[in-house]
Length: 397
Image 1 (spheres, rainbow, N blue to C red):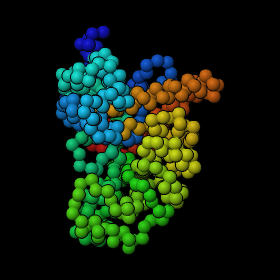
Image 2: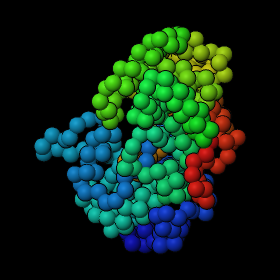
Image 3: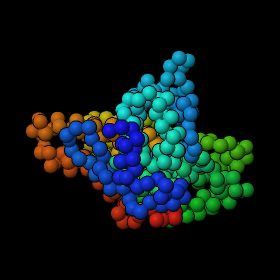
Image 4: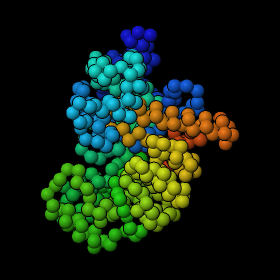
């Protein structure tokens, strides 16, 4: 099909962009499953348990590559090279052009030209709605020039639920508290207020003791923070971080633990068993297998399935693992993460069925747990209602 006709067909299937402005909401949530290249298990609309907003406005080649580099955890590409020649870049070239009415593997220059031709909002709309993600858990709290939850919900035609990041929440409290007593009281109030609308809390942490920090130590740490010059994106004092984490656990909402290696958190995980609060480990590569092992040990602990679900599904019960994209800034990253996950689950299901480990029906059920079912249970999405979605004005949990 010619590029123009394919784009027109895509617009007809998803709704004409001219009928949906940037501040308007689409008529309903996404319901399509994740597209596949070939036969395999069909996934339900994915629940992405960890993502961020996307950038406003047009992107040139340089700024687009900068976001690709950030997604890869790397600095700028060396002279004479490009981040389109990377695993993520190749995935973008494979799966994103067809959603914009182009052939796969077109050149980066042609792809970005098509992106500009469609306009930033219209292109993002087609990409997000073609990703196969029906529900987004969007991290919030830090000042950002990325889209808000309501804006992403409108563009994606999906549901968006808020995950409140604790570090910026504590920084905002510190900036408005003049005394240690005010800081302690305002922190408790801010956590309580956030818990009324958030679906979960999130914190980046490398270690936490098995007991809450001594209140005197917390007050001393608060005094140090209040006497320091405000710095954006400052990592919290380790004592304050542990105080925030224990306080978040006390709310009963699920808490995401973003950690490089989850093993130093083992004592904390053991100590919080029986509290009634679910903890979700989101480690950095290559520690997803370790996280899955911990999820298998503790009933209240869950883990991100990671980029290689074949490894993590071998370490934990299937209902303990959840899908995420970790996407930020580029809508393309939502597409590529969803496609790579779908391919990985297809390969795993085919292997298990061929080896007689399970039936195709069982493989479909297991894939559905990791793709969406477990996240709906852990984050109480069905009980929470619609969140920030088409027709809603804000975020609710």
